[in-house]
Image 1: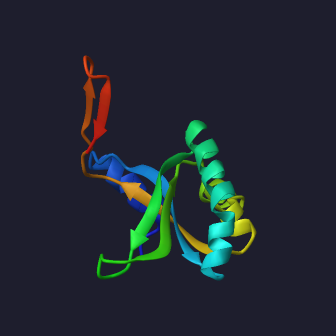
Image 2: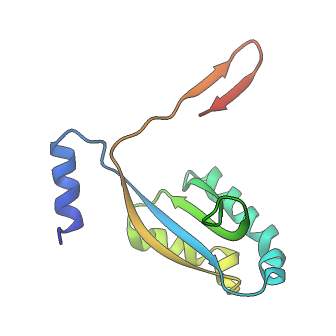
Length: 128
């Protein structure tokens, strides 16, 4: 198994982006009512992190069929270290109250694309 730091250095040498973010997969740990009860505070916390530039992306995931919502979530943090990202996840009210548990991993972004379209006269923004 290759050390993460070695792989990241090799990726940079190859000219890859090697942008390191942190991915939390959040899983329901209590009854749906407990998750719902913590939702308001969870969303307020996410908004605070977004405003501070610490939340890259977040949202729910479907089940394996893609047809049903099971309450799983994916949260992608911007942080200086795995430990700092872990603190962000641990301080999420959803995790603090035990309604959800999480796993956390480093994620290195090397390839891909995003398209941002800004309509000046229509005052619209689209991200695809």
